[in-house]
Image 1 (cartoon, rainbow, N blue to C red):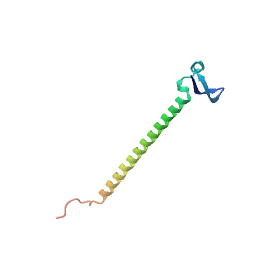
Image 2: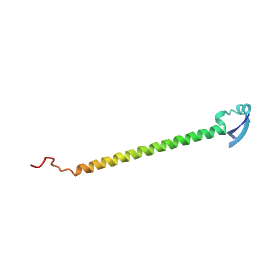
Image 3: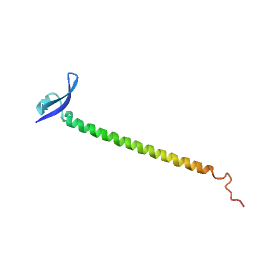
Image 4: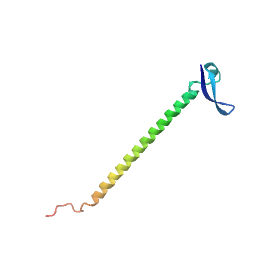
Amino acid sequence: MLKIYATEIHGHATTIQLSDEDAERRGLTEADTVEAREAAAAEQAEAERAAAAEAEAAKAAAEQADTEKAAAAANKAKTPANKAAPE
């Protein structure tokens, strides 16, 4: 069965259709097929999207914590310096 491989020939990126035997002679593996490379690229893109989403969530959580901290600090400034109850 013929498969399509992505490779370099004389320094030029190209795709070629080879049998398993011809691919083996050229040192190509299953990972060099166009299908495998597209799947790997899709996995990498998904991992990058997940990492970006995770970073965005962490950033939002940090901003929320900063907002809460600032609100607590602003609230403390409104309390009287003398906390003793008036008699």
